[in-house]
Every structure is written in structure tokens, then in C-alpha cells.
Length: 243
Length: 248
Image (cartoon, rainbow over all chains, first blue to last red; front, top):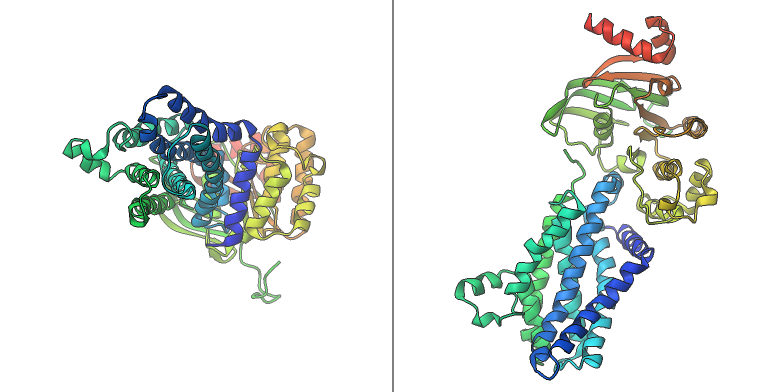
């Protein structure tokens, strides 16, 4: 890995984002609006305190998955990827360049969304707020890694967006948002154990419940492991020589 | 350029040597054992009808094409090897730059990847005549200007071999003229250029010509020899005459 090339890539990706103010606003404001909608919907019940944290785990993952898969696909299709791979840049420089840039975007997004959820919507969080931020960033990196991987299997932006229902929705449904995981049918519980978002939601719930150390770090480490796995698989799809 | 290994009396090795190259793309055979050489210096034109294998050959030279067998040697190394990634530059047919960045942001990014200096960015901006557009986003430029941004990226860091796929396609005559001047400057500075074109008129401006058809080289010649040997008045006619002879 080469630090100069990695950060040059992060800078380039952020500059591209900087030229797109509408996306930045959507990135920063949309999650808060949706969290607000949930809070409003469940006014005078304790449902929001139950599912609010899980929603916080969802946004960074979904948003970064979409942004990364579309951006990378654009790079593949526009010929810039082929050009990049004919220069000295390595595929990990490229992947980590993307991950740093989107990770940074995720930090800002998590900051805004967590503060909005806690101080405006009154979400009850027992654990320290910074831990929610950490979970959000790891989630975002997972979304970035899966997005990189998904982009390799899509030929058009339309197909890339269609990976949402295939790769993301099942994880949301089985992640424990609609039904606590330990009350699911055994088969679905077993499946949900193999979906990274389930562990992300476990982690964020653990922080909200004020659990300590291992209760938080264990699911977080599992999410991180999935992220590393997806990055390694994605790097295999970035080949200098293509058919 | 960098030819310390050669003594003055040794003729330099060719910039590109292709031996028995076989390539399949999308289920069809593009090359079934092609051999060719491209000398150092000057501009070599690759020409022939669409689909004859020009782009595939260029990709093989740059090292981005997966090949089935055979060898491609570029500047005495295996095509695509790590040391060649600074010495060989490639500009694809579509302007492969980031359209949502400014001209200068594009150049700065690629310059950092290959380790080219700030000074070099200024040089290429002048060379492709885009200094006044440096601060503009590529998607606000005309097609011809965007193509020149892509060319500017290719000549960053003074590569020894520059491979350009249809660089002048769709440009007006004035712009084409300007680009050919840039090409000749690059050659004067010691670079070797490989330029593809499916327009035969363009081919006449090259120093050497490789005429391709259906994945084979049907002539390795110069523009003057092509015209005199075929006795044709214009290059299109010369190409057709060659094909007829091969068929006969």
C-alpha cells in the first residue's frame, strides 16, 4: 500500500462529492428526517426507544452501500478505472482511498444523525454517545465494502440499485429491527447470525442499553470481520487485466 | 531516452514486440497468433475498419488486456509489468477523466499517482492549450476539450510510450491540426506514439502505418510507400486495393 496514492484517491473522491452539494445535503439531512419521522410516528409510546438505535445503525450502511456501488460502477464504466489500473496505483490504494473518503463522510453523517436522534427526538441512550458514532462508522465501512463488491456484478447503475432489495433488504428484515432476533424462528435466527447487519444492530442496541465492553465490541468485531472479508473479495474483482 | 544499456552502435530494440499473440474477447477470437513490431520514436498509426482489433492490440500493449497466449514485450519488459506503469501511458477512446472534477483537479490527482510535479501539470496544460479552462469542470467543456484533458493526463510525467485510441475522432479540422502538432512535439521530445484511427486520411500523417483487418496485420508500411505501391490516389482507395490483392 502507498500512503500518497491512497490519500490522493480519498481527496479526489471527496472533491467529487464536494462538487455535488445536493448529494451532501441528502447525505447529512435525510437520515435525521427519517429518524424524526419514526419518533413522531411513535409519539407517546416506548417503541421509538426500542427501535431508534437500530435505525441509527441502518442509515450509514444503506447510504454508503448505494453511494459506493454507484460511484465505483461509474468509475468502471467511464474508463477511469482502466486508466487508473494502468498507472502505478494498487488496488488496495484504491479501495482504502474510497473507504477513507466515505468513512469520513460517515463520521459527519453519524455525528448529525446521533445528535438529532438524542437531543431533538429524545432517544434514550445509556452508553456513551461516542460509541454510537464508532458503530455508525464501522457500519458505513461495511456498506462501502459491500458496495464495492456489488459494483463488480452490476453492468449498469440500474442494476447496482437493484442490489438493494437483494443484498440489503433481507438484512434489514432479519436484523432484529422488526422482531427481536431471539424470538425469530430457529432457521431465520441461524440465517440472521450470518448477516453482518444483524451484528451491527446488536452493537448499537448494546450501546443504547448501556452494556459494557465485550457486549459492544464482540458484535462490532464481527461487523469489522465481514467488512475485511468484503474488501478482500472486492479487491479480487479489481483486476488490471480484463477480458 | 533511457537507453543506457545500449551502446551507440547497437540499433535500439523495438518499442513493442508482439509474438504469436492470441486473444479472445466476448466469445470471439480477436487475434489468432499475430506478430508485429513497432519501432522506437515517431508516430505509428494503427488503422483498419472498426472491429479489426486496434483497441485490443492497444490494450495488450498497455497490459490491461487478458491474453490467452503469446508474448507482448514493451520497452524490453513484459507488457503491463510494474516498472512500465510510469513509462507507458494510455488514453482510451472515451475521455477517461472525472467529469465532475475540474481540469486541474483531474491533472493533480493523476500527477500524484505517478509522482509527476506541479511544474509538469503546468507544462501539459500549455501543451494541450487548456490553461484558460484549468478551473472549469470537465462536464462544462466541449467534447474536444474533454478529449484534450484526457490527452493531458496521458502525457503527464513524460512517458516514453504513449498509446492513444482514436484521439482525433469527431474533432473539427482545426482541433485535429492542433492535436497533430502536439503529437509531433511529443515525438521531438523523444516519445514513441501509437495512434489508432479508422479514418485513413489521418493515417497519412503518421511516420509508419500498420494496416489491420480481422485481427491480422495486412501491411507494415509508410504512408508514402502505401500510396506508391498501390498506385492509388487517396488512402481509402489504397486500403481497398491492398485488401483486394490479399484476397486475390
